[in-house]
Amino acid sequence: MRIVIADDSDFMLERLQEMLNLVDQVEVVGVYNNGIEALAALKILNPDLAILDNKMPGLKGVDIIREIRKEDHTVKLMLLTFYSDSYYRIQAMKAGADYFFSKSEDFEKIPEVIAELINNDNYFPINNHN
Image 1 (cartoon, rainbow, N blue to C red):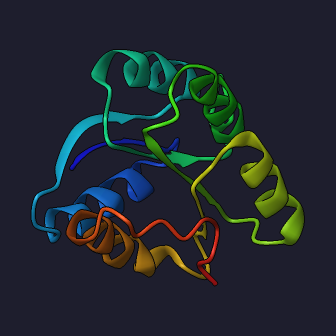
Image 2 (cartoon, rainbow, N blue to C red; image 1 turned 135 degrees about the vertical axis):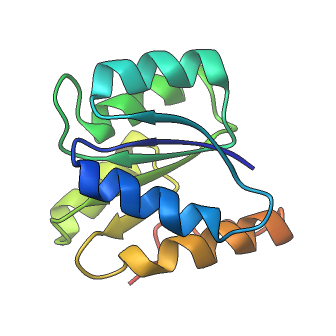
């Protein structure tokens, strides 16, 4: 599974890469710290999954998701945020996110979800990760 990750925090980018290195069949094909670069990369790299922070310089993750969904309905899109209330979950779902994770509550579940995606192409529980 080819993955692009984008977050304005170097710590989060490093932590995500460490976590993804533990999952078989994962290749991180791009790492970005702002939304504009991430959107451009997504259009060129055609990853299987993008993990996007919601609050980044340039473009927010939810805005990137809206833009990608205009052209691509196959890439799986995961939104990360420290804000776990329902407002942000609803905004992510409306934009077209497949997954929503709170960095403070569900962050550690990300590798498990990716492994399940790889092992079962039908595994696609939209926004059910609390």
